[in-house]
Length: 635
Image (cartoon, rainbow, N blue to C red; front, top):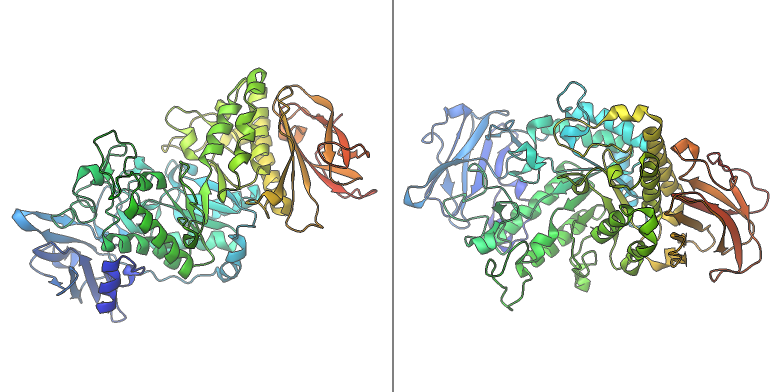
């Protein structure tokens, strides 16, 4: 029942479960209860398949307080389509889709559908261990996917159930811990990739029913894979059936275009200062965590929410009450959002796509932070890709672009993203960003991935990058899977799989991702040879650290002196130049013995061969051990 407490929380902006009250909800007797917020409407009725779309058949009654309209319909049935006929002031009449709809028609049709969200979940084992799988000290490696263009075996996108089986097998094979879905909330224009959302409570009908999507999440959970949902509370499209000018007034958006219109995306901006809008968005986020068992929410375009002058020139924005450019209402909303999520679902994560130097994005609200669990490290991404596009002969002048990331690496809980945004709109695929001939391009991509996987922070890689797709990504068509039959591309796939295995198996690579205690430079200044070397340490002091050495030139570096913290044998766990990955096979025959010569502030040292354009990962072992298998390499 919609009661006084619900009205109060709704207006306050803290109601986190509107989906239990608004929209089209079926009771146990099969009666459908419709409820919609339209406080400025003069008249509202529900029209649909059962009443011949007759606006006189099922008029709705408005609450005395709060602006919510209700009606119960006994003859409406699951699967039937419906909309709300909104009559506003000044002759405004329009048919609107339900903002709280749980299912929609297949676009370009725009009606909502009545549905139940009944499903028998089988992911109890995953849910019991989810807190450990999502923890900040857990190995997290994310495979970012656009559902409609991952695979199209028959020329059309796969449905959720077929996709579940194929993706679980593939992601398990490559060793990723999570899949991140580009927005699958309903959106009218496929080419928006889901970032122009109209259905904040409905999975897009393009790939099946709500139950089909539940099966997808369930199946991935059963195979030990988490699911992250890309979610867009920053703006919404102006389609007539959507939220724009919903009840004949600017209900969800600001009326003034200097606050309510987004010039970069030609869309509307939510009015975060309105409590009901805040409740709507918070309820949307919690809905996916609650009803669909989503494991994390990646919040898109946070920077555009934080700054009133984002993508605007002077005179195109309105300062806040203090005369500044910070969006105080959006800041308050984001804090309420994160507090609500972690209060009700402490075993999930919220992740901010935030591209500026805004402080304390991933720090608790009690400390003055925004309250996110993690934040994308866009600076690392831009600096690293800029460096990798340099000809190796010039890289000695730019080594600081790589080492600079460690100046701020622990100021936030960072995710290192190589995302879809970097392989579209003429930017070229990952491998095409690399410099040199084809051999160097593959070697450069291998060294990039090795650097990324050994650098502090969680990992995210967009589909196709794992096998070096030449073509820039497009949402039409599928990935070039035929390339995986070619040795160089298959070698990249093998490397990603081995990097993920190393990440999971070695505590030093994930336990202290967000602390200086887990990282120590050995060599960050050798610009002439363009190499970097560092230690990654685990949380337990008696556990084994890893030594990582990176050579960013195509010249093998022999007899390189590196300090080590322990005497004995250091074994190659990974060499990105191994022949099994498509490399040339330079290396150290799998093992190096230390000498008592101090170097780099360590009491012992080793002399290594650094292969061309390669990353080495070595682990200390005691004398006589010979238990590790490494790809064959030559000295």
